[in-house]
Image (cartoon, rainbow, N blue to C red; front, top):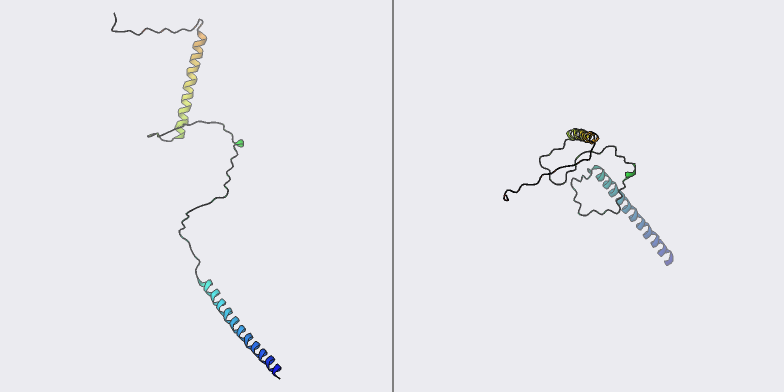
Length: 135
């Protein structure tokens, strides 16, 4: 009979343990449902300001395809250094460059005409500088 008593005690203890486990599981389920309700009611986190101390870039790929780039007209000014008092007006610069080109064309045409009119060799005469201290 003691054998049956030990088996009966083991079965009753097992039943008690199972009941405790079920109660504990129900409590955990209730807590979980409460936490879910709390998470649904809380507003989302909004980050207004972030300080980044270090930034690590593994790979930075910068590709330029200059083979397809064509330049039809290139004009303008190259300013190196401080250029105080000079503004940037692209229209006036292009007008100035056109007038400068026209003036240069006229000068070269005049020189060519003068060269064509001359029959003899070209020469230039320079005077001696005068020295005032010697007579």
